[in-house]
Amino acid sequence: MRIKSYEDMNLQELDVMKEISSIGTSHAATALSKMLQKEIRITIPEVSILGYEEAVDKMGEMEELVAATLVQMSNEVNGLMLFIFKMDMANAVLEKLIGKRYESFTDMDELDYSALEEIGNIIICSYVNAFTKLVGVEIDLSVPSSTVNMLGGILTVPIAEGGYETDKLMYINAEFIVDGVSLSDGLLMLPDIKSLNNILEKLGVS
Amino acid sequence: MAEKDLKVGIGDMKFTRGNGVIITYALGSCIGITMYDPGLKLGGLLHIMLPSRVDPKDPKVFKYADSGLNEMIRKLTAFGMVKSRTVVKIAGGAKMFSISGNADFGNIGQRNAAMVKKILAEQHFRISAEDVGGSHARTMLLNVATGDVVIRSAGRPEKHL
Image 1 (cartoon, chains in turn brown, blue):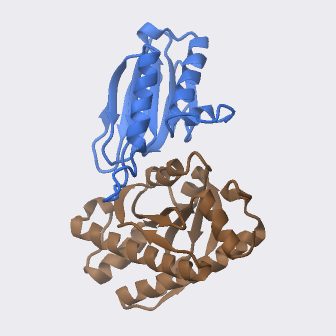
Image 2 (spheres, one colour):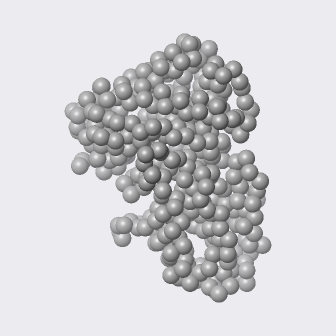
Image 3 (cartoon, chains in turn yellow, blue):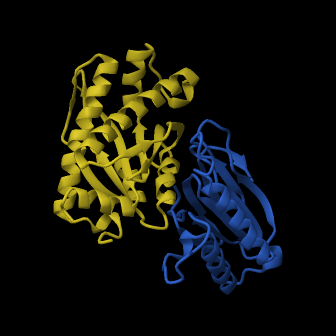
């Protein structure tokens, strides 16, 4: 295996990941747009390879409460997909689907949580679907699991899962612009190192 | 935060004497371990992420429960910590996500807790209080002047261990 950790990817390889992310994210935005029946624009995603603390700083604060949906990937690509809702994105979704807005995640009930989980799952699935077609790999997805917790705690999950291989995360960040308001989303795609090598090889960049 | 507050990152350990607060934020499946010698007002806080150091050449000793605890004990003992009066408290080890049909996923918190307890028992340290498991992240603080350990979680009252 040529790549031993996420940070071993060179600029060309990161560019390719960015290109794929851009297509994946636009599929995700289309799916979200259908669900919310609203026009959604996206900015070109940034793909960054970050350490744990850098990732937390980039997305918010350690103790900030966020909602997250996690899906496990298996088959030709093994790893995790994680989608993080901050309050603004959660409210945009819940307002349209359930007609409610909240000050904090702690005020929500089970129905709200499962609506968020469903949206997180749709975003992840449409992203991965686009990804599998482009790269030409088969990926199976688990049922989603979600939590409302401190951002810092949530990000330790992928860090610990990959902890024996790498201390880095691959963070894909695009702004979703709904009704002229830009909403921050955080999508993390975390293939294990063997799968990452496999992906880059299939794409012909390695 | 007061001037002497020390922040412990993931896979790290800090200790101090006399006064000040040592804090680590948002323990998920990770475990925070505090050791406090009231005789010296010497306290340390370790934040481990994984159970055991597989590669003995890995320089990140504090990332793992086994190497991290051994190094913490070695350092604090060098600063005069007396085992018989040392108070040990642990927190964290949550299962943040569960995937149905895959019971093994997310068990890292449980494995971390088991390893921490095993190493502490081997080294003859008694755990005087713990707040381990569940599915919520925790912030852990040790007040070195008093030995008080505080656990903060979203949507729950503060807890003194």
